[in-house]
Length: 209
Image 1: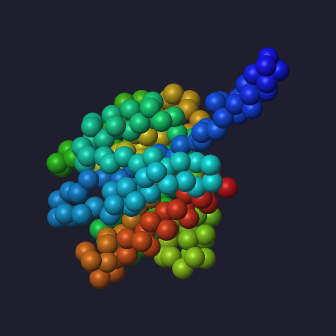
Image 2: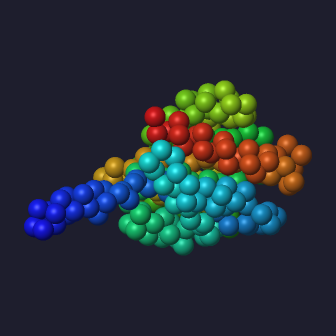
Image 3: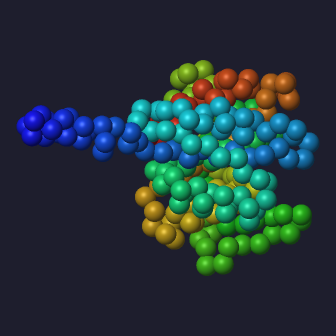
């Protein structure tokens, strides 16, 4: 009986300690704002929530278009989920392609007033391979381009603030920002939601390789 009990315990060890371990990719999108009653960045993020790319689970959160609240949600999610990668999504209403952002500026403009993060670098550069991602997206038939200006509003703010937070706290996290165009139903030059979801999956996979 004793030998049988030991054998059962040995067989159960992998199930108890290693069966459900996986890494986390945090994907964020923004709530609707202004004239945009639907924000495709949030729709894409939620479509990806709970899915897996390899052994990595995607956990998605939706951010308010509010500087302080959005950054607090990012920090809370980093603490809770311990992601190894963060992909933030935002809507560029004039975009006719997927924009892979490379540079975040230390500037935040809201209601006509601009400010800076004290002691922060002038720019933060995303470690994600923008050109590689674009080439991969194009090879799958999606329009994509690297971008070096994420604007001066909420998208740039969350992009810069997240990179700055990772830098200051010496966290081992890859972070990037991707602008998506409007939905096809919102603008003639827009993209279908399914195409956006597939494109972001491809972008994430390319970032992991």
